[in-house]
Image (cartoon, rainbow, N blue to C red; front, side, top):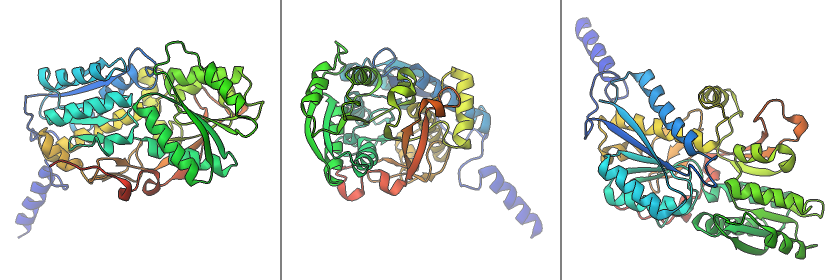
Length: 416
């Protein structure tokens, strides 16, 4: 009896207590003999600093760390990481995704800032029945009207941003808004979500205007002049741009002296790379919502230090999400024992975890949104910055259950 129990325990150790094969046993079956992960993002335009080439490095780092932890053979073969620049054009992004899926047998596409491109690639993923982790694209369309079985919205969305920032700013007394937004899927959704959140909190959007995307002239003076005409009622200029377009707008906002004229700035989406470009002095006191911050605690800092040693930059939250999404995909493959897309999807749906990026996390089965804690943050005063890139302080945590669109408002029809 003792010998039988010992043999059973040994067998369980080989198989792994979680029910999937232990590392290094060669149990993962790869459809094409190797795994291919494809990173598609903006590597040359207005969003290049948000993820870009460093987003590619984050994915490579995740693969290397995974193989170090579980063994080089843990995934049943080699893992190739490919990348492409989508140039912020939906047709280019869709073409690149189809090429990766068809020619290179890519198992997964990840990243894809620019919501219009993200929507286009989600349609390709559904057609090809291959996975897509939308990290950089914020539009809630990806988990509503454009949702599908093979697309996962991983990291943040416009609801999370508006639900955090707009409500906080209105509660602080910023009730009268003028919103300017980039005229494409992301900006249009940001305008809708922020307008709804402002109204819900008891404020009012006096006016909202679309701006060109990308802005070829880099000139936002028309909109800043209009902001002046809305005084004295106007209290908040809501800037929904991102990346270099946001940097240009904030520079011009400061040049116009709108802050001194009583018009405060509220930013819908702010990255550490933007603060680094503008300096904390240009954004001091700005409150915003973020999915993660590199120096928010030891766990985040430890990972960020390793990333900095590799890239010489502090990671934005999409870079961290690129790493984390890759890791969770590889874990799902390992649990499934296969890179078969349907089997991997089954492992991801409803999965709960906690790690350096996503706290109290769950991949919601009904719409494939990654639910996790979000954070209300504030840009530090220059005197409070103690080291390079340490530009932000976390004010409060928005629990995962409150941060994202409640299921009762979701209208995703997930195809079987």
